[in-house]
Image (cartoon, rainbow over all chains, first blue to last red; front, side, top):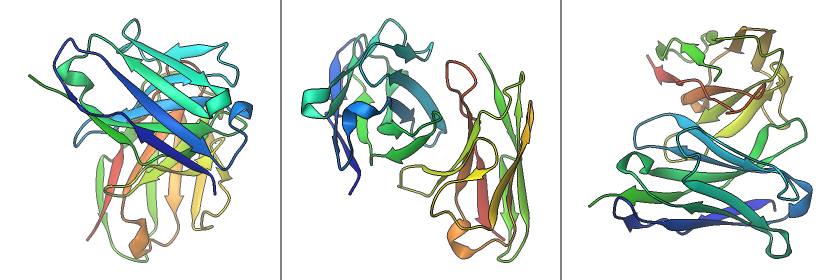
Length: 118
Length: 107
């Protein structure tokens, strides 16, 4: 079964740092581009970041550029999101998602919750 | 950045109704558009990609159309399990923006 499981979400103070992880199983992880997407409480979806299959290309939303870093370890079938200089507006449920051929996100995890609050 | 505007943001409909949701892009995106369905407390689910291609396993009552700047998602006969929020997303350029969502509720 194709599965993505996020972890690492906690309550953190503004200005703090956090690393999210996403464990992949059931597919050949290093064949696929991966994404992070977030959803603030009661709000819509916001695309956050993307990393190519080999880690050679990364892209970010303007709202997180310079503060968040996406990475992957293909030997561990894992995706990561390093989040620095956190702001209250980063409070959200963070999903990782697998990209199918063509760029569309066809498999999603259940998400991990990040709360930025003093 | 490309902005996607969905309309309506909310609609109330009955089982069996034909429902149409529109997504307008601030600039042309060819057919690089997806539609997702999200139910409360659940992750989004890919319904339509490349503007009009049905994702495997998605019921045929869902269809998508459009290209350039205007797109539609149609549910031909609304079923109880279709009450959810629907989002469009463009893949033409970065950042990969989503529309604001359309919540479909039971009348």
